[in-house]
Amino acid sequence: MAMSYNAKDEVDGGPPCAPGGSAKTPRPDNTAFKQQRLPAWQPILTAGTVLPTFFVIGLIFIPIGIGIFVTSNNICEIEIDYTGTEPSSPCHKCLSPEVTPCICTINFTLEKSFEGNVFMYYGLSSFYQNHRRYVKSRDDSQLNGDPSALLNPSKECEPYRRNEDKPIAPCGAIANSMFNDTLELFLLANESDPVPTLIPLKKKGIAWWTDKNVKFRNPPGSGSLEERFKGTTKPVNWLKPVYMLDSGEDNNGFINEDFMVWMRTAALPTFRKLYRLIERRNDLHPTLPAGRYYLNITYNYPVHSFDGRKRMILTTISWMGGKNPFLGIAYITVGSISFLLGVVLLVINHKYRNSSNTADITI
Image (cartoon, rainbow, N blue to C red):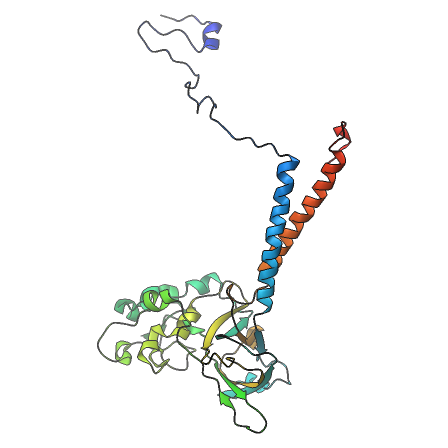
């Protein structure tokens, strides 16, 4: 049987249901959520609430920024560029591939004593460790000591996966390009005592704890480290195999801390990596007293082919970390802008508060 059309049924939501049936309606349920009757906070921004907020932010941020900025400026830091591209540089002779090995010496002066522990970094510029293929060129299973991955590295390591029909350990472009300059620091005491004093550099404790104890492992076995790496070969650009990186068993092979520091890739093309620690031994004397020093460099790592730069950095730290004035400047800037906005809004509020014609205010 055909059903007759009724416009009223469409308006009301359809024809009435049969007796005993449930009524259908497009209306939402009569609940606080569906009927949008939930309580809500609708703040009314007035001069009495906005102006104190701006002034409080300014009064808090400015002193914090000044404190951070002053603390950062009190950190002692010195950078020595030893790339050698300038003809007058003592390391200019090392740019020639015929001079191998090449040792150069750079003299410098510390105008201010370095107190507390001193950190020695090496810095590189124009080196893109963040390149996608470079970052992927490694085998974490091999670095974790997996015997199967040791002899059969991941294909991600190509073209540094095999050499002379032997698997490379460690494989990949990151390991192949490991920094291998040697830096030594000497103190020239005075003219009456021309014999320089070698500054002791600590090579342990520079890597992350998780790298040293979790991420990197030497291959298992009871034999010597050389036997555990049997059947593998060194990376193409390395001067010696991985099991000869250090004389100590706890800092050799894949758990060598210089190697682990290098394998943690940098995010920017200009970066620094921790090289050594200079620990304070006597509270009565500074770690590095003011005076004349010289840096003895075994120049192995070429960077001039890609217009790179190399530098050595000596720095101290504070409660906020290393030298970085940006954070203090940012706090001071935000606090100053907030305080200035508070003053401007206060003047505007005072000028137009008693005015009955609000149309004169233009935004």
